[in-house]
Length: 215
Length: 87
Image (cartoon, rainbow over all chains, first blue to last red):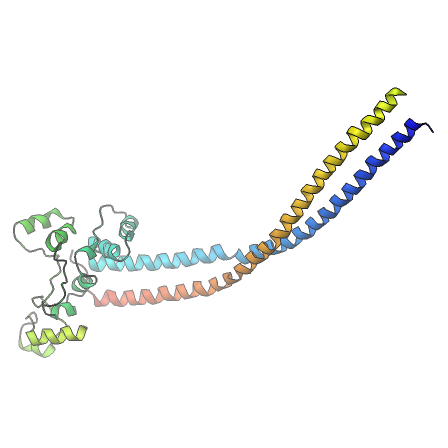
């Protein structure tokens, strides 16, 4: 055999040997990859299976919550009026008042009702009418913000007529009236109401008792 | 004969290193893929375990439904108790 032929054979053998070694190594790695992917696919299948009902359940929860929100907002609008309802929601959840207006298809600036009145006082005064606040003495913590009381209260109502009435010195019918001069007091005194007018203001002692009861 | 030797030299010095280089590249890529898949396995298992709490969504849905019903009942009562806003 000639030397050149022997070298050629050697070179071909070396190439084939390199191919075999590397390709076998690659095959072994691919088998590992296949086994690993089988395990991963099993876990991913579990993820898909477990998360399958999530959309339906979350949509159902959102539907229930939306119905509850709509119910409460409707009740609040009915009892407090459209302007104050958004203001009340804004006072508890900043930013939610505007969203409430949008859901009602209305626009306008939402007045944070808590900037004018002590939180909760206006709710009781307006919604209850005969709230314990009506029986309380005028002394003690302020129910209205002294710094912004008059102007801010007027600004809460978008009706320009209210501003005109206030400028002319007339009363604002929608403003909550609280204190011993309230038209109705809580609790109603049945015996006294039979003897006197039901809208008669309570005595100082009655007011103090009622105020102590609310604490 | 000279061309044969030239061919042998090319085979040994060019073709064989190129073949080895390409095969080594394929093997390295396969090994990196294996490492990535091995790292992915515990992550997938953990993700699957994290979703075990999804079953509790059924309870959450029922409780939300009951809560909304209770709120609706309270709303109806409040509607009766409180007077409407002046129009």
